[in-house]
Image (cartoon, rainbow, N blue to C red):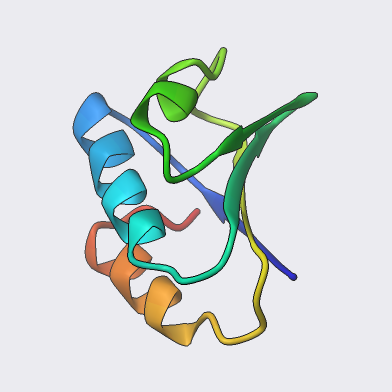
Amino acid sequence: MTKLPVKLNSMQDAKYLVQIAESCPYDVELICGRYIVDAKSMLGVFSLPQFDNVELVLHSEEVENVKTQLSKFNLLK
C-alpha cells in the first residue's frame, strides 16, 4: 500500500484523478480527514468535504506509472 498526498484545485483536476484511478487494476481510495471514498468514483470524489488535504491510497507497490500521470496533470502535492 502506497499513500500519496494530492491536490485538487478544480473539478477538472478531480476528473483527471478519477481517470487515472480507473486505469489502475487495484483498489484506489481518497482519504480526507475521516472520509474514505473510492477514487474510481466521480460521485465519491465530489462528495469529499474539501479538496486541499487529500491523500491518495494505492493498494499496490508498483505505483511509478500513477506518479508519472499525476505529475503530468500537476496533481501531486
